[in-house]
Length: 184
Image 1 (tube, helix red, strand yellow):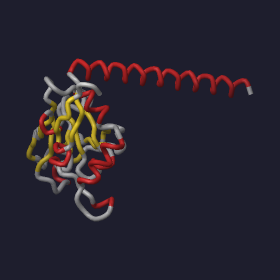
Image 2 (cartoon, helix red, strand yellow; image 1 turned 135 degrees about the vertical axis):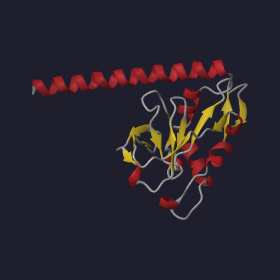
Image 3 (cartoon, helix red, strand yellow; image 1 turned 45 degrees about the vertical axis):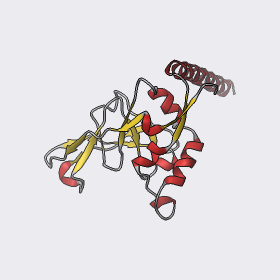
Image 4 (cartoon, one colour; image 1 turned 180 degrees about the vertical axis):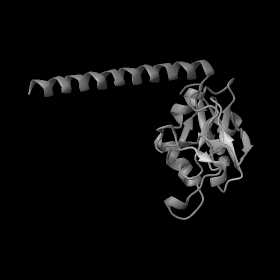
């Protein structure tokens, strides 16, 4: 971590809400955020006439999404082209990175760390784990150690290379186990 600069996340990440007013005659393809760094998922579509919300946020491929209800337990994720144009409720604020100083993928891996969730848990408000909420400012107040943008990209490349090798090893193990079952 030599030459890594401690940076307030709010200096390299900003709130970006593409707010749309709900039309009661429209259907909205919805997205949710899984806890523990497991990413986004598709939810059932919602008809505008069946929700009490007045607005939704439209996702862009470049958004970072946080669940206000469960962000403190890792419900933070990167959007991508698969989710672009879909919607989240106002309980899921969206952010954009300063691409000159923060690589989105680097941030995505950083957000998957349990120590970050612990820090956010301390910033959540409310009584009991299931009633806590996390304000977007709580995320923006967190500090991140940032290497240069080139170093961030190199780190992401190394992490993704390792993840690819782990996935390959898992597939080989499954194939071996399947072959062993056939032989029995």
